[in-house]
Amino acid sequence: MNRPKLIVFDLDLTLWDHEDASRLTPPYRREGSVLIDSKGERLALREDALDVLVKLKSRGILLAVASWNEPRVREILDALGISRLFDVICIEPHPNKEVMLKKILNHVRSRGISVKPSEVILVDDNPMHREHAEKVGVRFVQFGKDIRRLSDLLSLVE
Image (cartoon, rainbow, N blue to C red; front, top):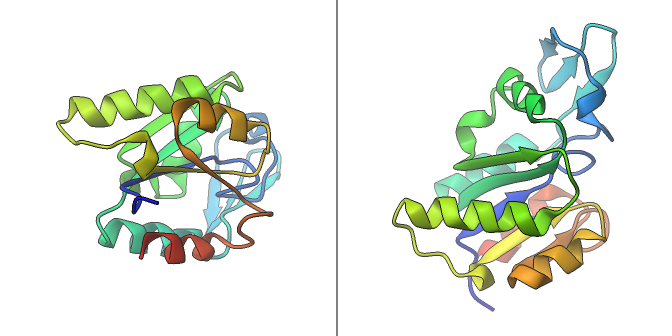
């Protein structure tokens, strides 16, 4: 297996604990790694998320988001202060990760970076996206099953 050059993260129930960030209503208030929307609903980054993202970046791994959400969810990434860690953010209101993965790969390649699908990992909690990843030739890692914590990814990039 090729060492990954790009890791693509889902957001809901993967990078953070909330099941549907599209439901949240701005403005947001931040308390550390927790975001509270205008109605008091909370969203928390996974305990090890920030540390893992920083470590992956320091190892030269490209990072991306592929999320089935309303595009305004990007504001949550901004409010949490983590947008800057991602090379590509693809947030679209449909479940077809195959389409998002292709867009992400095309964007990376348009920057002159050579990345084969076999050098990409999609990390997602939803097993239905395994098929989408496989159609593109991307490795699928199911959060909660294949890995229990985001820090488990670090062993995949050594």
